[in-house]
Figure 1 (tube, protein in one colour):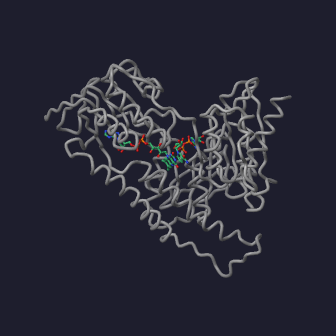
Figure 2 (cartoon, protein in one colour; figure 1 turned 120 degrees about the vertical axis):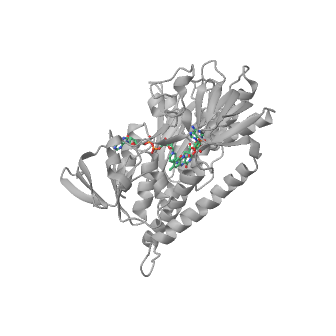
Figure 3 (spheres, protein in one colour; figure 1 turned 30 degrees about the vertical axis):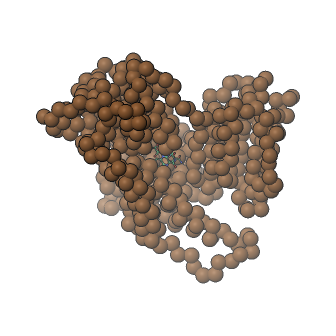
Length: 462
Ligand SMILES: Cc1cc2nc3c(=O)[nH]c(=O)nc-3n(C[C@H](O)[C@H](O)[C@H](O)COP(=O)(O)OP(=O)(O)OC[C@H]3O[C@@H](n4cnc5c(N)ncnc54)[C@H](O)[C@@H]3O)c2cc1C
Ligand SMILES: NC(=O)c1ccc[n+]([C@@H]2O[C@H](COP(=O)([O-])OP(=O)(O)OC[C@H]3O[C@@H](n4cnc5c(N)ncnc54)[C@H](O)[C@@H]3O)[C@@H](O)[C@H]2O)c1
């Protein structure tokens, strides 16, 4: 067994791990980064980037089909060449992965260890079969994986997760999507727009990341106009039959129907990759899902020299959070036992559906009971209507008494951009009155935001 001693060991070369490695190196520590799977990061290989590439193709198809109300006719057939669609998704995805691989190649070879890491004790790691690593401090940055309900496994290769979708050579004909969360909505809608027959089944009524019931109900209805979505589905039976999956379920109108699908896409949530880390060999206290208890500000696990960042800690499983957390964990691992709170930005989430969904700051579910809610519908909002994108409902939340802007949840046009404006306002701790003193151009979708802010201001005054 080879032995090695380092100051900092980072487990996982994803977005969080690479940021942690760079921070620890910048602090002058002898650091290694350990990767068991493929290099390239989840975001670039099977996450953010290929999903947005598929959505871009779907949007192109959708726009082409919806020109008539403008008096613009597309003459002739609109053909979706599934092979060409998937070829571009993979080609462009590979280009993004290539940039990550280049940056990994830039890491000195002696700092890059290959193999899955397992804790032998708090500061000893077994890497693969033939290396034992003693590290003064460890950063866990092992990411997350799809949480597939065990009965789905019986479907064999007809069961797919997001990773599989992006390696398809062509588009299938019929897909049943389980889970109308962020991934299910993005991929389900995109596949539907690309001509795939899609059924999206959920449990409990949730849609995307929305916790505000009025916005969730609006979103449900808006998506139901576009594709089959039952957020609280009754699926009576699901069996594999040859190369197909036969599903018997209660349709939204109550009728029991049986349909055949080429694939079942499980988008039923993700769980942190901690199960095979040997955490039982450490002195770390674990939560019910086996994730070490940690301080969200410093990312330190208890008082130990172990830190946890990115999807592995499951607080905010988003790319920019993984990058920030990686940096904090790497810096604190280097300065341990001195640790300090890292940068925590205003929370910001965007679902790249159409209409887009966004959440900023405090979620509805976490608001104080007396919070003020300003509202705007985008249905008659000027610019949205000009562009025939007039679908959406926004709630902005404010603190009674102080008028501080707390957060927002909404579905609506160009939400990805308004979300940034709002996240910046939240991070600067602006009040609704201060936000209304900011410039608004005309005619823009942000004028809809201004209507919601004015509504909140009037309610605060009342
Ligand atoms: C379909 C999809 C779409 C998404 N879209 C967006 C989006 O639009 N915007 C956004 O902000 N976020 C998006 N996300 C979320 C985003 O991709 C993740 O939050 C982010 O990639 C997490 O980075 P990470 O470093 O924590 O994990 P990863 O990038 O997964 O890195 C973890 C690494 O650890 C390795 N590893 C695991 N265990 C071990 C071990 N024991 N030893 C050694 N190595 C190990 C893994 O092989 C992996 O390479 C999306 C996710 C998915 C799945
Ligand atoms: N645009 C983005 O930023 C983006 C895109 C994709 C993923 N992500 C990240 O990835 C994370 C994981 O996404 P996700 O969509 O897998 O999880 P999610 O938690 O957003 O959604 C999972 C959904 O599956 C449902 N579900 C659970 N079990 C089910 C079952 N047996 N049958 C039917 N439905 C079931 C849940 O009720 C929920 O609606 C997100 O939280 C997000 O942080 C972000």
